[in-house]
Image (tube, rainbow, N blue to C red; front, side):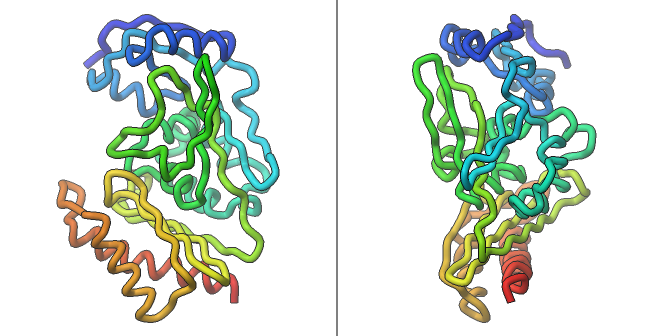
Length: 275
């Protein structure tokens, strides 16, 4: 299939892009890498009247550090973040997760913020943003605001972004001193969306643990430092809270089992780095 007809705006400034969003509202869509949006257009699952291209805008491709945050603007491709110098030291969880994100070809075109906007509940970047307690930077013609990742994802491919807003950037907290990170996912083939993905940060005083692929959005829990049966009990309770369901990719039982087994494995992996 081919997309339904639409108008195309190649924005030459951020203000022009925001003006187009303000004018057309829900009938406009931002396009950057297009790796999520173009298939939806071709299958006519999305039928915007206007596409607003922001990839030519200056200042949207430079990853920067602001205090304890890694700022990733809307034009940064996934491959650029993966190749960013010092990423493994600045944020080990991102460095561990990015090789599982799609394939070389899609990472070379797809943007980080595009994945966040698409909000697939099985995607790795939304999982990392929630696991780390990251922030989404939104901008409209009238205002700018910041939304915590845990509040941004509201359901299956739905977010808190307004029709007149674009994701200007996302910020990932840098690695905390005295913390260790681990990531693992289970999928049918490398590069497929995760059937279950797990991310963990372990410190001396507690555990941050997040899961994707089970609920309709990434979910995170914070626990005190646990081990043994206490960790098993916490993971089991979390697995049931996620309300896993059967689908063509796997059963609810499989997903709960993966949360329990992979969860224990990555918490122990991260904890071993602190020993």
